[in-house]
Image (cartoon, rainbow, N blue to C red; front, side, top):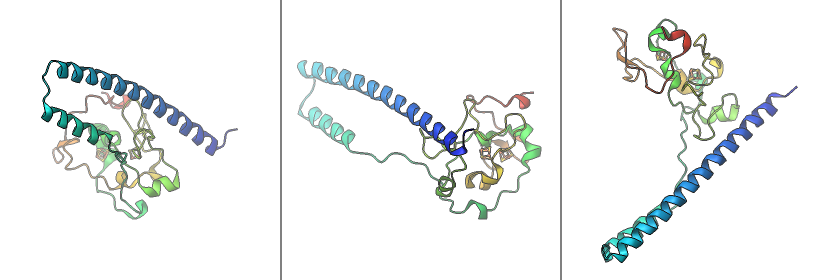
Length: 192
Ligand code: SF4
Ligand code: SF4
């Protein structure tokens, strides 16, 4: 029988492979674009449409593009998720209205989560909690809309307060939800 560690390593391997494929196809697209641009600049140069100022500007743009950039890493700054206070929102009674949409948001995990290794983050988008194809967090139970890693959920999930979030409520007091995101597939039991 596979140990948890083996299963976790297999998932990690798969994610690395996916990220590599994505990178390769992006590199091919960039190469194509670069060749196209070089040709365009060449044509403009031959037609006499580029003056010295244009050439200097193109040189600067190329120099800027070559500068190494830090990868965009999203990490929550919550140090100890077990010590934070949760918002006073009765999710159980509101979920039929809100459709648990907060569990489809981009949730950064914190260093503590990474060290614990209990929650999975998206290797293509470090360190955002993994989401499924329907747009929801992988830990959200699709039948019951319960959190499948409640005790280990990230600090952002613990502290989030939807009451004044316009992505969720047009009017929280009157329980009027905002329109659901167009790319979100509503959980089956909440469709009615
Ligand atoms: S949107 Fe608000 S009420 Fe709905 S599950 Fe999230 S926190 Fe709870
Ligand atoms: S970890 Fe739990 S509370 Fe946080 S987004 Fe996922 S299902 Fe929702």
